[in-house]
Image 1 (cartoon, rainbow, N blue to C red):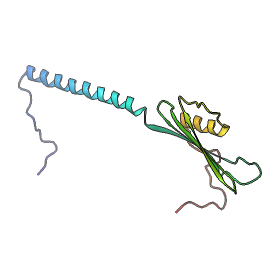
Image 2 (tube, helix red, strand yellow):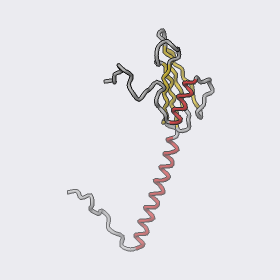
Image 3 (cartoon, one colour):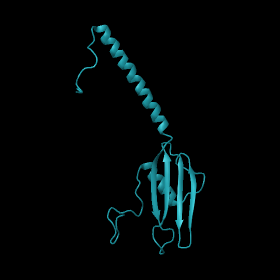
Image 4 (cartoon, rainbow, N blue to C red):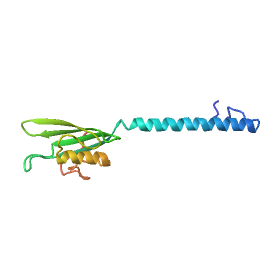
Length: 139
């Protein structure tokens, strides 16, 4: 029978052995701390921030079928993708983002999506905490 509380190693015989084990633990702790710092630096290059803004580019016609999505890494580098929807067509645009800014002109909705991504506010402009009357949940 497996006993999780059973000691697998014997107690140190003297202070010298105790000190040796302690120094070994200290070295393992240092190695683990260095590995964690290395992983933190590597993680900055992974996409980790997303901001979404839904909007209607044509007032008085249609609804919030258009959107901008910003996808950024830990250094605020990434991309913003915008889809403009009309009854006749749908257009999609992509713009690179470096340090939270783009070399291309950004629409207000694209700027909002980038700010939401940077600040961790991922809810869309048209998103309410209550469901509109007649709206159904996806099943």
